[in-house]
Image (cartoon, rainbow, N blue to C red; front, top):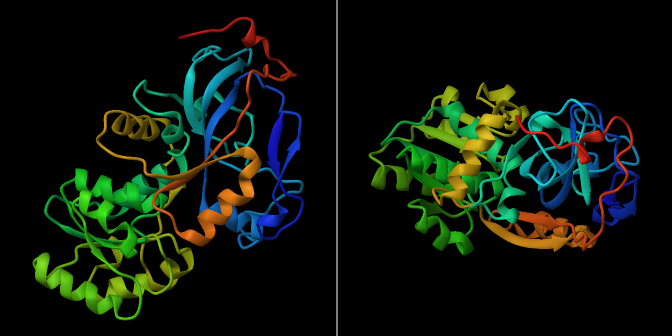
Length: 331
């Protein structure tokens, strides 16, 4: 099968697509033919070595956590899935940017009929992070929540989850995403010099003078800005772990939002139109460099997604203990 690989830390030029053997199936593993797999900023940081102390790469390294596709084989002890089932889920092994991926059966949920493949394949990392971040600040109806980085993959979902809780949202984002934020009922504040004062004026004028919580998906000065607005540290959540430690704020992310229950709920919200999964661009697997260039340099609205193009190819040999392709099972 074809899969994304890199052999050293570096910029996007270290990324390539190579022929590799899929991991053999264990007794409780499922092999999935990948239809869509989102890319994420954290994967870029792993590739550059910025997260080496926390998440070191082992070379040659694959990449990718998000996935959606069709079950092609199951391990001997799998009872919840059968060949042909449409699924979405995640890989902990940095392996979903590939034509096929093998994951434990409990890292998959069924794809609802109304959920497009591209949205399903973009949902896990951004969705679980958004769920955990919103839960960390516990917004109540009528409260005002400021969101920085409000139109990225995580921020765009967090804005919608906040609105479902009937919170008022003040969103820090670029002007080109104004229309989308207005469609979600959010008030946009632009980046740049004076952002703290613009936030203060907006909150005082439109939100009763109080910012109750702050979700930071941008980093930099935003945790300090949140404190300057009078937001209690316990209701500030940032993805900047260093800032959270230094300032005493919260830093809940995808690890705290991970779970089949949460992912299934998000998938149902998206399938029924209660939330949108914004997709900026899709790329075939061979264009992985272009996909990451867009993500890293263009600051797109929502997600960028890889679409492995397999054509009529048959599933590769699974190896290991893998009778599931001959004896599919359901609960």
